Length: 419
Image (cartoon, rainbow, N blue to C red; front, top):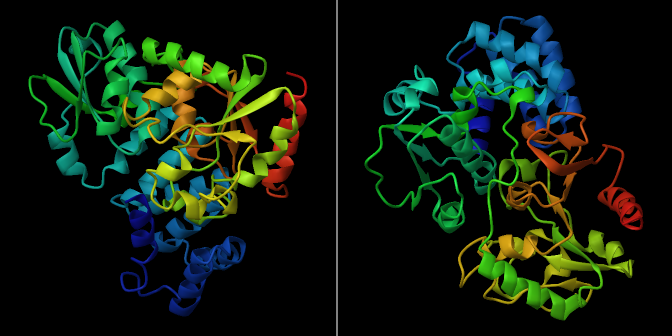
């Protein structure tokens, strides 16, 4: 859906603004579409200089700056495009992510409300914008899931804790079906139900990604009382015995996650692509004191459509991956989605992962996590930091544009030698 919004805005263009130099503008968009961002940006900057009051050119210039990771350079172009066309929702959302990435949460969360395309309908359906935490005391509040699994792990139970401490009587998590069992174990959530089921008996409903706005969250006030999720203790005990059979409790246990969800817009840009071919991690297995565990579903029972295709040749079912321990076909199936993963994480010493839901699960459980980020990372990780205020137990490893993933993994290998 996000991908569709972006390209709708890219192509709303020439017919609406007759003063655009049609040929040059189409050429610029083609360059951007083909990931030739620098060349496209140069042409867009020329057009923006010629037509400084054209919101379409300004928006696409900002968008291209952002794709290249030049976030601060994108901001004035977004702001100018919005000043000329205040109803441009994609520009508001792009500006929101730029503000958040640069630490301007005050303006960022306000603009982030434009992630909802129909503002009038959104505010009618979710009439919470004039409420404060004080108004919610003694109430039953429904927190509505949106976006992805990782987003919900990062925001929904974290802010459920804040609401509970503010005096909310009951919190209902209306969430994605695979998260129901996990969220039901959260001590701050009174009831977790699937989005497939109707929710009733609440006083106010709030979309999960609007909670930072409601709570006036700044960089310095991010609620980071970790852990706020927990694994099933029976499964933790079970997997403690199973892992002992593998490594005899004699090695450094590292959980590995190398593949983000295929097909989403971040995976289409080489600069924002999060997934790393599995074989790049093989050098870590050369360390004799390390045992690597896959935190992906079993190769033979992958639930992620296209996982083998997008993960590199080493993930084929006929591969002999002796250096990577994989769990069986029932993993995260019989006991529920993420349930085995959470219990295994509780038995590991370290998680090394690309930017995907596993990071948020492990982060919320309080496990040590090393995150490998592309050269242009998502807004939530901000710009240059090696730590994140969202998870005090997470360390960020950012790939520089001149680096390869192998270079970054070599750095991680050196660090593991000291553990």
